[in-house]
Length: 477
Image (cartoon, one colour):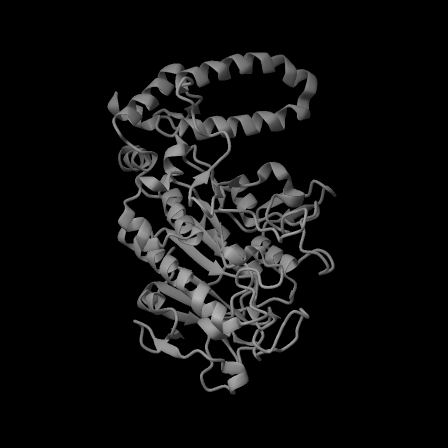
């Protein structure tokens, strides 16, 4: 009986013949009884994966850490110390724990984790406007229109998070795809930045948004916290009553009712998985939270680790700092005062949080199955003050540069302590092994067990499209 109860921990009843059914009232009560024993969702899932039939191996996952604004590759992880001063800039390279690989002097903690990292120094595309460039990284496809807007459009290509939400073959009731702590959106604009949702595949495939509060450093999903007087048993009773009411409505309203049913099912599954527990980072020891840094970035990466433990396939972490309200130099955007901003704000936050995240995954045995990707929408111009797109660029800053930039990848079977691809002497163009956003997307999809050649139907035109036209990157293992 105890083992059978463990099979119910994810909100589904798993039988020996691998058929799953909706949870009964008795099943709901069993789930509640397990929580009374003090077991959190990650622990329940671990028990199920350890003792359940055919579930011994943890499924692959991915954390997509998006460095919004476009970090300066040439000042951080593809430095050119022999280049002229107007190219190499003010920072000095330092050695890492891997002989022959250097990074910026203001990333000392990351330097100690280089044995876990692969630097892809040959990322490249042709879009130099923030919104469309973000779209290319999020979707793995060239932007569909003119580079004149940063805002979402119904014609957007579906995001990786939406592809995973739709096509991932999940084993648990936790959502397959989560975005945190915010959807990217420039101040003063009415809509979020392009490429972050289901787009032309359908908004019903949007990932679950877990919002982070930059003041309290807490996370929430609206309406998810149970009230004391409404236990799970009562929720289950309400659901059965609603199912009976809807039985006739579906026949009459058809497609109008079905999307609402889908959303309701998702909400119910979240309640059954007691998602409020794994959204509470305050359950972590203070020492762990301090290790990541008491910033929204640090706590978001800590949340990402908790979500991976809970069984979420793809966690998208969007960079957020105090400059997100600056329309000219938002987050990693450094048109002005490039070096002070990197040294005093961006590098300290990133170095502390990302190095702690990698080490934590490694210590918990999660790095082997978790692919970690940290990348922005592009890099920065090789020469200081060089104009490429924005008139806001000053002599102290660097403009947008998509022709060559760097992605940091780790885990998921990728061999650490290596550099893949290269840029030329000034970090301006790719010289060896170019990698497109499409190739990166295909690599992530393949890691998650999703065929990049899988297709979907465009809701606007009825045309079928492959999830990715890219080729998974080989030779990283």
